[in-house]
Image 1 (cartoon, rainbow, N blue to C red):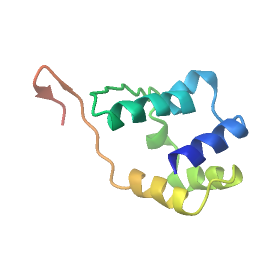
Image 2: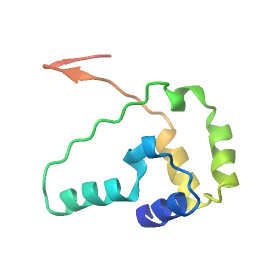
Image 3: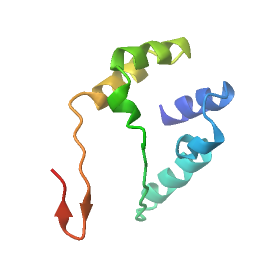
Image 4: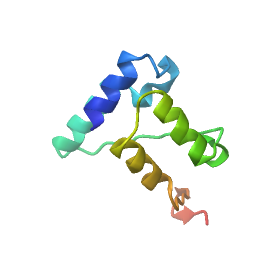
Length: 95
């Protein structure tokens, strides 16, 4: 699924250069590290809190406009459901 989604995004120029965390090269690097049982850390910053501000139904419609639907959309929506996030630094974690 990762390869098909990355190929679709590349093929239709749906990802900007500034969004390199979604590029095929980046995904291949991270996947190779995991396959080789190497530690890999990534930091993903969503400074605009896009997923918190965009209604999920609107996101779903936008994905469908770009021909991303079916199981992929269901997977994304399931991932978004009941999300929680926190930050830990030096043993202290936010609520």
